[in-house]
Length: 220
Image 1 (cartoon, rainbow, N blue to C red):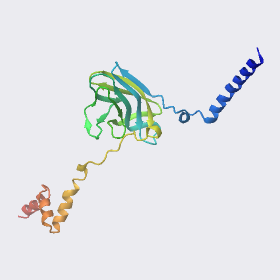
Image 2 (cartoon, rainbow, N blue to C red):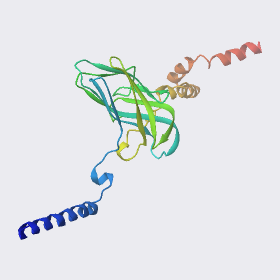
Image 3 (cartoon, rainbow, N blue to C red):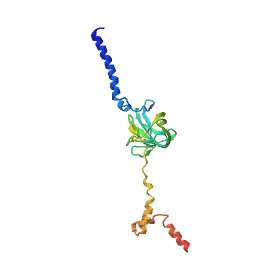
Image 4 (tube, helix red, strand yellow):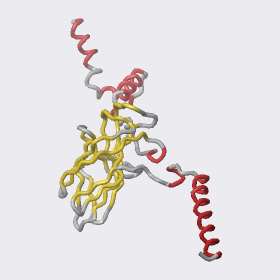
């Protein structure tokens, strides 16, 4: 071997030793390498594909968990016809489906070529009010489509932290009907003070007038 070839081989060996050391210095954890968790992916036929299926529990949960959970998954309709996701189950629990406005729906429609990310802000959701899960483990998820049929996959269970922050189950806002019973009582109090308009509202209550009239009959 000539002297120039020996020098080239030696240089190559030195370079091969330096590169791994530089990589170690830079770090080899998931955040440095930009590696996302290896989550379930599956498909039904050639038209429906589901990627990164994850069951998300509330922030701070760990180990064995019992309670509400949401599901996030990217669903793509690669076919030429519309497809409808009609139901989702996490374990044996049926999930409630909502549209992008938060309204309950019977199905989520995907137009041809459309993909939907369940659980994202401003998007449709699928969540269960109660479930038995092992955070950090896996849970069976089942998806049923109008045309493609049913498919199941084991999905990773993660808390709503880091990459999954904002994908956890949402706390339901109080419904307007929850505060409605307070209004007649307030109107009745106002009526006792002599307000004509409040008195008219109080007289509309079926229970309030019944007590005084019943008392008057008893005295006779």
